[in-house]
Amino acid sequence: MFEPRYVSDLLQKAVDAFSRLPGIGPKSALRIALYLLKQGEEEAENLAQSIAELRRKVVYCSECRMISDSPVCPVCSNPKRDRGTICVVENVRDVMSIERTGRYTGLYHVLGGIISPVDGIGPADLAIEPLMERIGRGEAGEVILALSTTMEGETTCFYLYKKINPSGLKITTIARGVGFGDQLEYTDELTLGRSIENRQPFKPE
Amino acid sequence: MFEPRYVSDLLQKAVDAFSRLPGIGPKSALRIALYLLKQGEEEAENLAQSIAELRRKVVYCSECRMISDSPVCPVCSNPKRDRGTICVVENVRDVMSIERTGRYTGLYHVLGGIISPVDGIGPADLAIEPLMERIGRGEAGEVILALSTTMEGETTCFYLYKKINPSGLKITTIARGVGFGDQLEYTDELTLGRSIENRQPFKPE
Image (tube, rainbow over the protein chains, first blue to last red):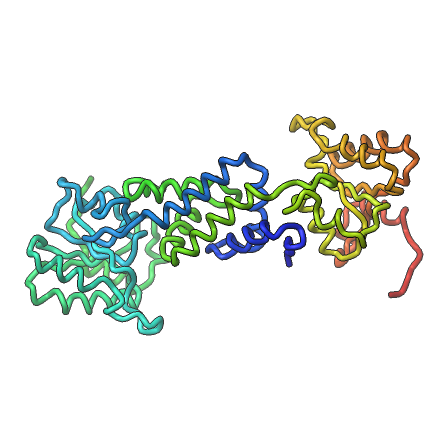
């Protein structure tokens, strides 16, 4: 194993800190630390400052729980977004993925996880009450459940459906089906079956 | 591509800074930034501080050019090390590798690179003058050239040999040969040829 300790306690401290990050092992951590030592001082200062500011200043949007530099995120505060639709997602990354498609103009709601008894995550651990509160304000006409098609995702969808349904809102879920570029013969039966059941009128684009 | 910019300028800044590190692409950088946002504040502060201190406080040993927390590194200031032997290496990492073997008790000299006309690195870019100055002090009796077996490594060895030889010091190079665990049939001819020429008395351990 790597023992840069006898060389420099400060190097060791930096290597330890980098090693704790996801996807970075001790070898990569050492490589990064030695790289920073070789660069000009502003490179390291810039990285250090970015990290400190990221954690100190980034907040969660009081409306949708998305990360944001301001109390209300750019999506929620954008008057051009359709305030009648709320797309419920598991995490921040899902919002980024949907935004990248450029096909969605409504608002979001980040749950911060999904119901997973195995991991000890129940409804109370997720931002479900804030969602119900938003719905209670009566601005939304439709809630899109955009969760993973895993067992946990389906469980969470069902739980949310039960909670939201009494309010009479339209509840939808993202289309499941064969992905673009996928070959039918390699698509699993469940997906292929659903995509046939939910077949749609052919629209030449 | 990833565009977290519309989400948070601070997130984007951190992702950009992480992406500049070796071995970290934009996807990993985003993953690391989101990970830091999820952790307690001390995690990010600790990382930021380690990075800033690393660059600000780590120095190069005035003797051997190894990185160090003090003006003279722990190896050079250790009275138990054999001051009569200087092992010349390309970089800081090589010192760590040799130290890990636990088989060397002498001092080091870090060149900070090797002669490489292709990359525009000549003798003047390396810590060769400081090496000659150390040799000039007369404490050393042997210089070990522990450089890579590449063309650049061989060129640098030859250059150093020409410089040091007039001083009458013993000049050695690390043994080239078949590595432990290597199979003869997969060893290249040059290595195998040298290892036969430089055969040594068999010593049962």
